Image (cartoon, rainbow, N blue to C red; front, side, top):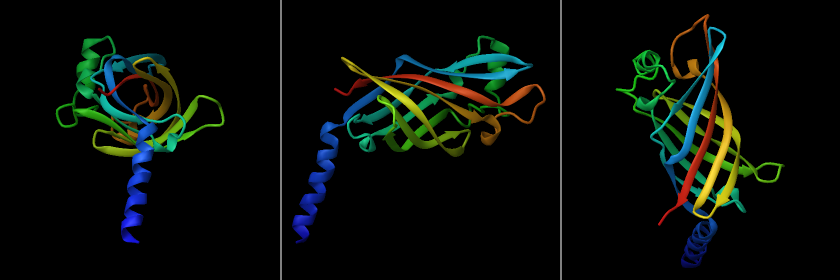
Length: 182
């Protein structure tokens, strides 16, 4: 009986991974951007250094897993002085916290064709918060392009302090290109 149960369990997990595509997130072709109000003006920026692994099955999204990170020292708003300030201890503290990570806990299909919902944990500056957001997955010959947006409150992660001129809330947009593992 024990052997039969073990065999069924192994076959179940093997079957899950047969149809899910194993992908590697690539920095080339990917964009992680943010926008935030500062003095009433929208400031935009990007992060590079994207790394990670994705297991994606559009037919059975519950079998999917996202494990991604970006390098905080790559923050770029187009103004060097601001970028240097964002890298300091009161904002991203890149010396102590070199990456922002996202690890999914659940992926499901939405009620709209081609749109999925991911839940997971984002860690910024040592603080982890649960988030969920919709994304679109578009297949290509060599992998997938995942796109979407979500909102964060920077103060939830101790990124900067209270400010009358800098908004607490920001929008994050992503376009993550992932290629088939070889």
